[in-house]
Amino acid sequence: MPRIVCFGYVNPGVVFSVDRYPAANTGAYVTAKRPFIGADCAMAAQMLARWGVEVHLIGNALGADDLGRQTLVQLAEMGVHAHIALRRDLHTPYEVDISDRAGTRTFFVEDAPEVWGSLIEADLQAIAGAAMLYADWYVGPAVERAIAFARMHGVPVFLNVEYSLLQPHRYQHLITQSAYAQSPMSDVHVVQEDPRAIAKALHALGVEVAFVTRGKHGSLAIDPSGLIEVPAPSVNVVDTQGAGAVYSAAAMYGLLADWPIERVVRFATTAASLKCAQHGLPHMAVEAIVAHAANEP
Image 1 (cartoon, rainbow, N blue to C red):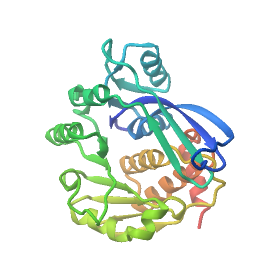
Image 2: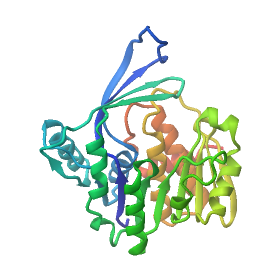
Image 3: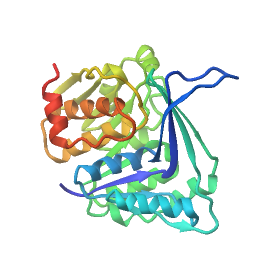
Image 4: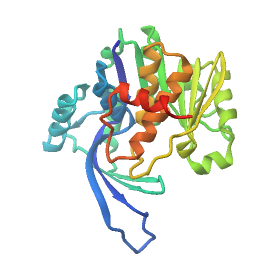
């Protein structure tokens, strides 16, 4: 499998799982807790590494403190080649996420503008010669720099982007430079907008394959051959944190394996759904996920 580079924010944190997110001035019992390394780019990188892909992670600098050093050690142990500087003048930010059985996720992350701002200075050389660059849209000007570097070196871009037809020109400058795009939609967004229209709009902007994830409703994709819709397998939801990143990793895996697009979408939808049925990122092998997807209608 060719090399993939993931680009975006990186920070450690913890996920607390609860049955129901508490109302203001109340609380909830934590049914499970687990550490993680985010954000989306980092979780996608971890999944790809588990599937045997050579994956490099370009992220913001972290503090030269115990938490920062521990983060790099853990990434290395997971097989992720991290290109992340440790700086004495920075403090490694920590994140707390709350995940509930309704499928929602709420995050609280330390405000660390110096840390996030350091991403604009990241060394991009690992992108040169890669088979694909994964990029998160929400990292500001740094993502524009990374995409420009990838295009200069002929590396196709897989863009994770929250696209809306209510603001069709927002992020258009990123989308038009990407070969692939994945746009997430929550249950609320599915009611407000047509996911098929979003996929078609992304494709019209020049994206070769556009994926739209719809949570419990599954996902769809559009490429030159047409529109493909895949329902989500029925699972007992316990933790949705990271589901979008798992979908991205699975989609990239299938694309680089040159699978037919329907197989890619089924694999990605199944992988993301199975992730929601467990705490943390799944350890299932590619073959097991493919077999599970084959048994779905």
